[in-house]
Length: 505
Image (cartoon, rainbow, N blue to C red; front, side):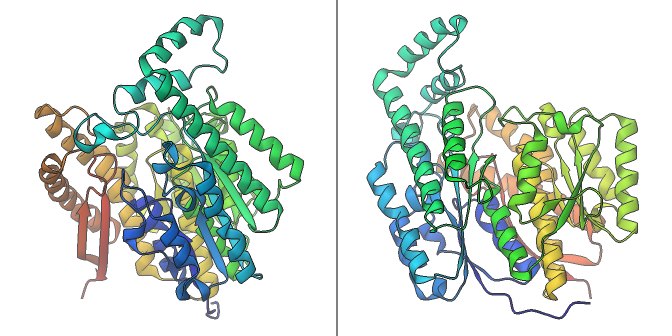
């Protein structure tokens, strides 16, 4: 039993207002008993509407943020107004530069504080949206964004066999639009390089730059290599990381801030479902999954230790056969029964089918293994999934060691993940996409208000029914006291779940 510690508030500036980037880091704090303060929601923007960086800077200089000694800040929100805003040419470099200089002023006001920052290396595709409603005037709507995506995924410079297609794509995109895209890429690179220099100068204690959705080939490669060279030249390898991923970075750095507050460096073992699991690559990442996993363990404030771990991360990789699935389930069950902290990340969605993922999730629920997990994640890129799983387990372990652990908040987080990653993506999302397609709406990345409202209601009803059934298996001693289910960005890519559980009387 650990004596309770008083854990100071973490001031957190999210990447944007999506549940995975805003809500989940706050829930990590609740699990560990650490308050996580965020700017008011209306400052964070919403999808195509950028956040308000200047108002957020004022919030960082305000009374709530002054009461903390730990900061986790999205550089994309501070510089541009969020992830979507970082992909468009609207913000000039000069404006981004002066906004980010506020981190230096923050350091001057909090000389002893720990300041963590996370940014992104611009992905290859602009934000994919149809040319409908107000999206018609957003940067590079369909089909232009798809041409840019294909062009950016060619070798740089194009191979001989790619030159003819590259010329065709340039013509389809248009020189002006292509130049705007390339200018935005260079601006983002310059901002990331500025962040490295600010870290070298002491304004930032820990920096991570996440390569948003991009594989091993494309226009981003020279950016990644140049930034890696800047890190090496400054001798900052121990303070600056360049990793695949984006959406999980806030969670991972909040987990690190939580672990630091307890003076704990968690030791994490990794167990793959197949012998060659470490060598598998996510097509949206520039390195094998082992590289991203090791990086995320470090980013969460932990260390890889397969011999004497505090947390065992089980990773189910694509094409795991039935024999190895059985062995995986047995191993997880044995570790739980031994009282060990078990985290689980299912990456089989990389097979481009959710059927395999859904079947194993149901086995976890049926066997009772799910109810004893310290974390569960099973959807989006490898980095997003693993980052979520490790961060949740670290928050739970830190809270237990500090005597501030909140079991109810932990149950709500895991329940949220299983309902979202399993029920929504495996069952409900295909259902609502089919309903839209039947209406002749084939692009589900941006819905007009009159299209979104009935689909949001269908999503709410279908997901509520599945959530109630999942809870009976997952945590039968709890009931749903309150739940709100939304489509936060008026698209079907993600759902929002705000749930309150309560013990059965």
